[in-house]
Length: 124
Length: 171
Image (cartoon, rainbow over all chains, first blue to last red; front, top):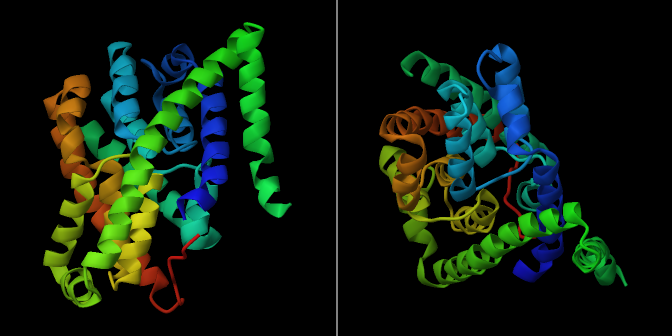
């Protein structure tokens, strides 16, 4: 199972590496920083959904963003979508769950992330 | 030949990265560094997950899974899968093979998706890490708000997939 998944996984990681290179931290701060409003939310949701990125990369990245003035609610959306939805990682997910269920799981998670951000916004 | 085809893109990618290093092409080097970071993480966690899947397959009998996290397991079952997921580490795609073995052994659809949600967002080994970077208040709030949300997702997926012959496949 591992060996059969390997080419898909390597391709996926290669794509994520390229995307991460194309979007430097300064760009993230620019679009999600202070006064970005709805635009910040949309950016966080879209960029967060690109790939599945685990906590130990997502947390430090979000730490930098908060230090640069990105709102906590936007960070909540970004971090949740980073960890739960990944459109570049779909090829691996599809092999287990099929297209329909994978896409639905990702879309529902995306909606959930926005909801979580909204509630976080009330508290922080 | 078909087997080889699957490896064409990964091989082209690695050759390009290798060439970037040879000719000091900065963009390629940075992408290579990113790739190495993700690759290390995959190669560290994924084989462990597969070993765990294998052991689970051999050691845990189907009746146990069905009884504790199957269709009739209720809140205790939900609690158990969340505990199981939060104790594991790694990126979410590492959880897919484990979700497969859970499902194969009789775990309910609801609990499979709750497992994935918990695995993605809440990690006991990672909590201190999150607090360090994002603060105690943010981390606690995020955990407390996220928990009911993905339990709800589990119920939603179960409701949607109930009569649809859903299965988790082995790739």
